[in-house]
Length: 93
Image 1 (cartoon, one colour):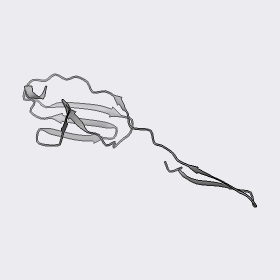
Image 2 (cartoon, helix red, strand yellow; image 1 turned 45 degrees about the horizontal axis):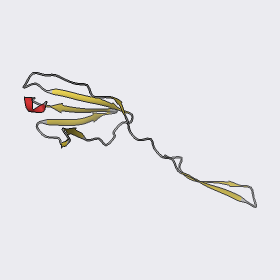
Image 3 (tube, rainbow, N blue to C red; image 1 turned 135 degrees about the vertical axis):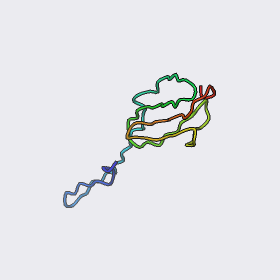
Image 4 (cartoon, rainbow, N blue to C red; image 1 turned 180 degrees about the horizontal axis):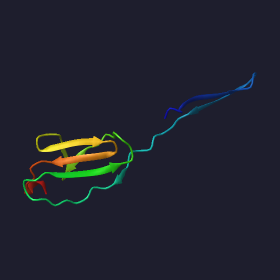
């Protein structure tokens, strides 16, 4: 993206100009989530790998957004996005 800008070729009496735009590739999931089974009361950790570090991601359960709370811990380590479900119950299935 730092290569974007206006480029010119100057031959003394004439100038050629070109505007260069560089589109970044969208972030992609490179390693999918895996199914997990746990006994009630235990923490469950879900993670996936992304093509870029520090991507803006959102976690959902059954179409509803998950936010950081006492129940859910969400964080990223480089290209790895992690969701920890604390004190799991049957409702977390």
